[in-house]
Length: 362
Image (cartoon, rainbow, N blue to C red; front, side, top):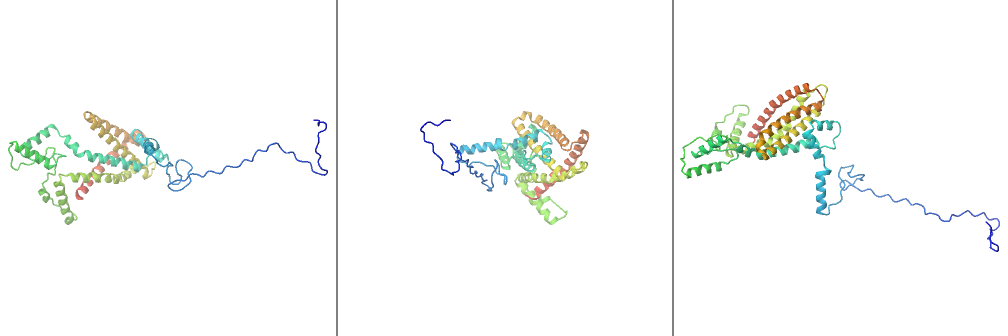
């Protein structure tokens, strides 16, 4: 390119080094961003890398500032965050043996732990059983029994029925006398549908015991009898229902030993049988509980509901044994028969021992 005439061209001084080419614009150097501090778990102080703390397992949540936020979190806990509850109950009711199989195969995070599941369902079941025990007995008296009770009360007898206090029965008899009914003399109390504990403690003196620890147990038996007679057996029933869940919890480890004899080849660990029994008993509690509630809501179909529940429980046990132990139908059916027989005998002994313990500890 030519230089215009007359333009002054700067001359480099002699001996100077040639100047390096300078770019027209130099972009600023990229400055690395300061690393963002990882959030810390409010429970243990460990650094969080996800929604849950890797050290203690607590979920990361913002502080609760409003009622709406609190209700949103609570609703999420019930319906979404802890969906293990619904998944577990669905598998427990309609997929026999799957919970035990999944637990043994290592897929455990999606379901509730077996022991917690059993404890929760057993507590709910026995609470429901205790709440409906007295009212259910009185409601199932036949018309003939009700007529006999009414006739006995007209004669002046104090007849106790389940769920009725002695004062109420006495009031009924007194009202019948006030209406002009003849008052019978020393009429034996009718027992049609009635309570074996009639409030009279005199018969407790007839209890004799000559076995081991006679000096200790005989006064204890008499005292328990008098206590049960005074409250028409209510304390005995409550004590029995209070101790029955504990007896069942002790009964299952013994039954797991029988399972080891039935399934000795191929070998299974004792804990595998115990887990299987925990899940099957949890299912039985839930099935009977739902059947009881449904029968209360639909009393006209109570008999049908009972039969359907019994058949479904029997099929469920058979299917769960097949899924768990993976043996043929005939072999599984034979082992189920042996297990049912052992269960009935051992269960009856457990119930009798629980009733005796409840009576002694009144």
